[in-house]
Length: 602
Image (tube, rainbow, N blue to C red; front, side, top):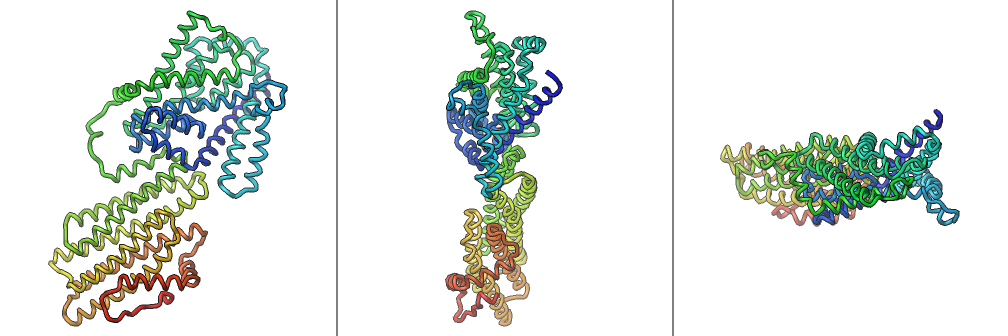
């Protein structure tokens, strides 16, 4: 084997690993985070968890990726350790699908249709179709399909290149003698462990082993212990990802290691004991790709069937290895539990990371809404604890903004689908609006706090006007937040009309205060506080409009907010008039005459 053959083999290995990466990435994008959401939610039973783990891993083509996700789920509190164990076991079974696909390369027949089953026969066709989709299609679903096709084709081309490059080794006695060393179970396991730990993929290392089958020098006696070591080596990725996580997350990674270690030890003892008694005739036969796939699958199914009934013992073993401490039982604020789902491990799966961001930003919106409701509720009666709660919620919202903003900015460097890219832009713009609304809620609460400290009270008429005004603000918050959470841009008209009503209400409330002031029924100081509350209402309404308008702009690739508002008012003036009239009648202050401004003149 000369220098150029070695170079070809290394190039084939590089293409094989890259093809596997591209294939897994394409499958992950095509799933759009749905497989991960299923994995997160449907893990109630042991066998159900195993099936889900196997299914998700078969789709994303990486047991390491699945296990790392599980570590992230456990770390964020989404998944219990007991549920994670079944998923981890299933991931080990799901990863064997790759070896079965690669095993198809060993098909030998002159029959045309059987030849078509060989990946090397149909992968060039997939590559052509994939490149066509990639060059001429603009839709994400076709681009994802193209990535899958091209990834599979590159993977198979790399596999074939490796196999062709190592074939001459069959005539090299030194190579055959070298492989005999690994027929020693301990040395073979160590070799498989080291190889998998380096490339961090059991599927890839098994593929390399299948490529070596082309030499004819690799016997099952050599291949079997190497496969066992490969299953242990795949635990390295999860162990590395668990560094710096919660104790439960580290326990999930340890369970993965124990599963493979115990499974390997028991399998090796049983297998080699039977071999000593019976003597398996296939041990010295040259290994074939399909045979490698069979061993890989049989071991993982055997280990799962053996250890799944004892999953609670595995959990206890993990707790004995990583012991509990008192701090694990101390209650934490809900904000900490929410933020924990923004785990850095999800960055490798942007669709899943965006789903976690969506969940957190919805919690942020709920907190903002609650802070506003608590603040305006002080109109009916002062409560010091409510004021403190509003202030604390504002701090929580600030923290939401900081953590979400940082996480989303990191995601901008990842490859996102068009839908996720739009959502990311929207979230980055929206968290500022949510944070400002919570600021105004605090400002309103502080106004009522000052009134309490100075023993001041609004007149009955002022209170009635504020109650009506508050209902209008409730409506615009509810409508805009619902529009955001349901991604319903049709509600933009209602929000626009409501803001026009809010603007008119603020003018009217101030006018009436001035009249009462002239009659000596109100004080200047109370007027300042009333003005602060009204200003807070106006600004909350403005941020509600900004929130919904951003959604429309992003979906329609619009850039200028002012231009957008003018365009809406020109094109849909009649619709806005009708909505304005309806809302104005609903939130009209108790007066004989109403000075309604035309919404088009705003």
